[in-house]
Image (cartoon, rainbow, N blue to C red; front, side, top):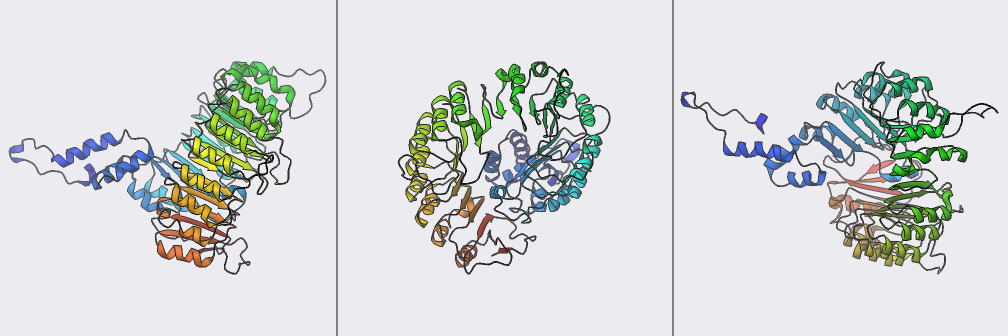
Length: 575
């Protein structure tokens, strides 16, 4: 590119000499590529030829690493020299369900060390399921232009690290802590933000399980005129919420904290007018929190319900995204179906995730949603009882579904009315929902269900399977029939070496394959490793001292440009 080429020789007599035609084309190409914003488009452009490959690398400002072990930090940064925003993912998703030892890896230290040398101009960083230390955060806070930090499902750091970020990152606009495990170092990190007006636009700390100094938080909110997103932890009472809201009526996203008083209000004391605070926040479009909700205070949010596009609690309104616990019951979902005609995304989580629990939502609620919310595009639904008829109805009523995740919590549960497998329900989903890209299966499923997925799931990119299938044939249907498959997660299913070998020609095009408590042997895994040298094949043992004869507890297989990692713990064997 321009800085890589020697200057053209001067022309005779000092007259202007135009640059070579190929250099003109490359300069134009750089300007054109700056308008490509989607990763897939840029990846395709980089494959055209060497010139395009160089130009794309030099114009990419946002770098996405889907697996922290897929490429070495130095290699990535030497290629994409001008990136100012980086996203890195670490552990696979099953780590969220305690299916991976906590000290497996995904350390951020080698990445931030390289960034300190190559990316001093870094402005934005998003990490997911990474192990981040306080020292990592201290080094990151030394970057002069750094302004946005988002940590999702991360651990290893504490309030000491947050204090350093708050005090040293004077241009900080975003500090979002989402489902992280944050150690309480008994440090008042909120008070560490600099005095004077701040640049804060988003502050999310609802996952921080330790009290905060409220007066410092109140002062911080008051001197942050650009603050749009604020999500509080459960130690913030509804009275304190009121005080924050009257100081920040410009908020668009609010996490309410506990949404209950910190102590019983004495008889005769005057409580604040909570409704007036919500009424003043006319820009609110997203509400969440409600950690210890007191129903008597719910009417306070009525003034903003008409504008909401997202709601995360046990209620109903006219919005696009709803997240609730299953305590909403089938009756609550029927009310949602009757009133929320424009709903696009629904997530119903269990209040008790045990397999033998009595879930208060069922096929009745799912049917009501499908009949009333026909614009639905994404659903995550935990339940104990389901029928093929309800799932088939959803496939017919909601053909725009892109994500369908049905989690029947008991193992091998059939249609609770007909006692038949759930094959036809999931078959209808992949057949009728032509845009489906993510699917999670559950319940009693035979190989027939997987034949449907292989036959009709041509756009499926992420597939999660648990306690399902009859034989290796089921997995073969998927690996041979789903050309877009990127992420495949399987647990407690009867798939063995033959099924694993059937995907040999697919694995280099996939981001990863995860199989735990299946019927894989060490010999079968070793064969894959020998035939695919650029694939990293990790065998993870649940207990370091407990090694089964020839069977593999967990197989985690992913592509990598730099070979096996150097920080594998003793319970991980890399073939």
